[in-house]
Length: 349
Image (cartoon, rainbow, N blue to C red; front, side, top):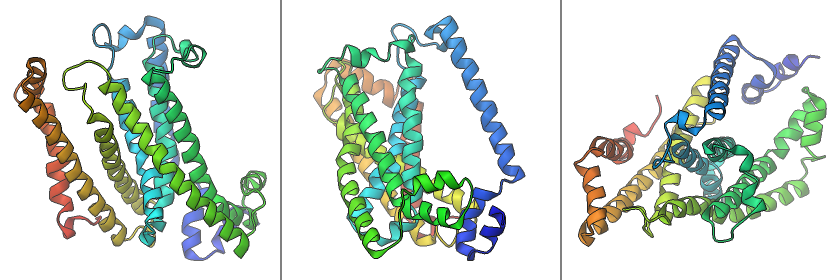
């Protein structure tokens, strides 16, 4: 019996979830081709950078940080969508979370890899990455960052894998190819009350352990900026500000991912209106928190009256960076607050 025939005999809800494993459509191959082309283009660009130096990117003295670091902060922030949000909801025993936790946890593992590679791309000599460990400096924020991200990636991967074990065992028992892979990943799991109880206890421990790890990651990233003596960067607010911003962007990314999965795979039975409503309320709360931290940061700079700090502040409010700043305020507060404050706009089309 073929994999397609096996899946065709399953109940409708299981068939909808397993069909992507055994059937690839023309749309899949089109998207795969587009992504492969993008990856090849990126590979060519990176080889060009290695050949002609980091100056080919426009990054040079005194501007050493650019799009790579922006992407680094963005992807690491998005990664909080999964592990942190899923873990907090699990600890809070929010039962509505069950349909979305797998998507959230997968986003974490996927995008944290995207984020972690950005500093390597930003190096003019990527062969010197090992110097972080070979010549480690205990007081270097860069070392803290590398260690925290490595620990976060490991913990998130385990936190994604462990709840998947019963599903992998189910696929193994159905006989879907590749048999050996699912046999290996299921690690001999049998769905008995005792095994289920042990697994739930392990997941609970992981959920509690992963929360401080996730918080530490973006706190350390905030410190990397805050420990430099630059106007409006050298601030104690950066650690918690980055954590709140990461959770904020993570929730937004998860809502988008849920909407796409619901539409593409017809998962209306799993991603229901109640999930979008609850996630919308979480986004509303983090939107207000983001405004609070942003206001607190700028108020203290304005009231302090330090010349260099004020120059930087006014360049954001009314100067050359005003458009970018107010666009950020509109996208991070005005638009999401207006949408999430109304029950009618917290759904999905």
